Image (tube, rainbow, N blue to C red; front, side, top):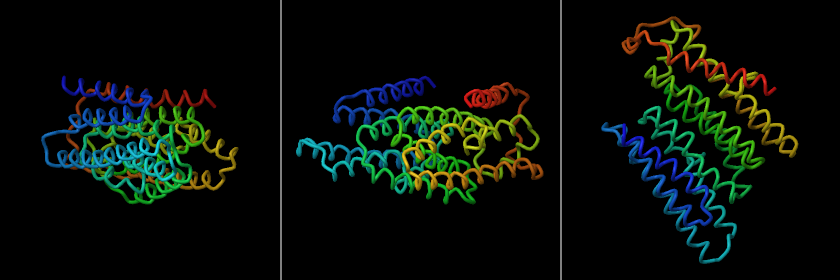
Length: 325
């Protein structure tokens, strides 16, 4: 526990160092420091987690090597030419886990704890996203946005693993955040904050309930507080009004329409409906179906204070959203 605290602080420091650096070489060093801080947090003494840690290390090492090569070529040519800009964008997208370079991301989260999934889905995206804002290639970025939104939404259909479902959801929201970065960085700050709060609530709940599969959500049937909490957060994550997750998407669509990006705004809007359908489908399995006495459903105690706090957070975000409107 003490070592985890140290490495989490190193992770925070490395991200701040990366986004505050004024040279590409120091940025690369910050990303490497970030990787070395993340690996101990992922390492657990079981086979599945060790495999996930190794895959994460290999992918990040390859992308870091490609980024270093791109930086060296920039120093050689003494300027940023289009091929180098495209290569740098693709390398950063690989680090982010954006489609079509997302397969490693989905594979590793299956063997990770919910805490590590939360860190990977939120904090670990900050540095690469800031780098995208420094130097992005519009054509590549728009293609990545569309591919991330479409492939994540198609893959989420009939998904029974909750970890993979949250992974594809993260890729879909990544497409929205990249669009925010393309339009307005302040809007990206707001979207990222809302997504982080919602993900924290949902993943803490899954961690508390020790859930891995979608059919395990039947256990929520007899716990109305858990059901209410999960409903509010998932509907908000899907962007249904009047929940707080609707607000950043609404602002982004308005900005896209003002900039006459009608095709991109329509695509993101239609794709978000697929994700919302999957979240509602999950709610249906919790609310409408009967409770089954599975062997994993015997882990409850009488301490509900944790769930009351999570539900309070969910209700507070809903009230906060109503004041913003």
